Image (cartoon, rainbow, N blue to C red; front, side):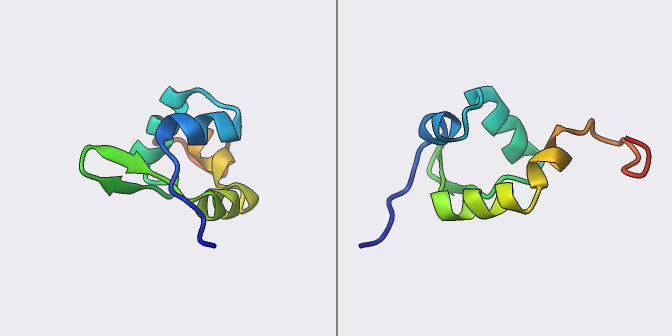
Length: 70
């Protein structure tokens, strides 16, 4: 059975973060998300891989900050 698509609210709950954080991560083009009309949809497998790869730490850094000097 294929996994279903999750909404931004559901994926926020799944990750234990605020929904606003999900949208910030999308805006920074780091969180894997798919636009369906006006809605964002997510596959948990893609999000899990993203988290495991450590991309959440990159998404938290202020934009324009030198990555060598956190």
